[in-house]
Length: 362
Image 1: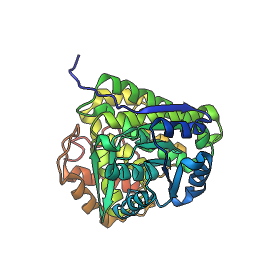
Image 2 (image 1 turned 180 degrees about the vertical axis):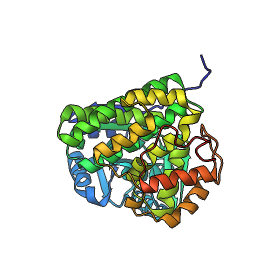
Image 3 (image 1 turned 90 degrees about the vertical axis):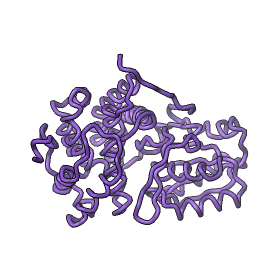
């Protein structure tokens, strides 16, 4: 047995159908009485409905949550929370709303309750990514770990097919990197394989039949597992590239994950062949990188960085930024190899099993 360290987060998870009705009780259990409801602008009606549902427990709403958690929005949200004398935050939505809740908690120590409506998985982590200027920085702190997650399958039934696909691919990325993380452990590896297997089955079903309740339940369950994976181990090249591209060029978060994942997997496969074989098995594919690309294609997710608005002239700067600071990764970071990875992702080339090998880039 390989030695390992594993620490389980102290979060309460309420999973099921119609579980949003438990929100008021969960607020009271935290000994709170004035909840600030958070959402993005398009989900304002959801935030307003939650506020109506909990009545006097709602201190107000703030609906300016944005992708990559810009610091200027956090500052406005914190000021709003203090002006309302809120004593907890409730986020409904995906990674943008969850990120803002975490940022407020970091600055105020207010407890969080999260109701996810996508498969981002960030609600299950003590990780916060924030953007200032053109740079996105990530931190880990117990202060940003949500105290309660209310998973209500009903909230995902109307998730558009495109968002279903890309947020699912985003979540799978957490599981893939958890399998080859330097601080991986047997528990998380089991969760990662289960999550990949569930998503590989449920996501194609949801593209064909978005209202399939069993597939929605399976996908939401898989998203939670992926969030647990992300929270337990360190992330590598894939997440670094996505944060770099998102922070520097404001690329859409989930879509960027969907594009980069097959290519980052191909890059690392030569240095993590055994665990990538396990990932391939969970995908039902012969090769993990190609299997991920084929899954994204089948789901109708984007497969090229050019489609996301990145310019080919941006690739050099992105590659340099991604390797500037050392971080754990199975395969050593090479500027030339990472630049090739980004070029392949820019063009949308299907990864081969030997893509990213040292000999390929020699």
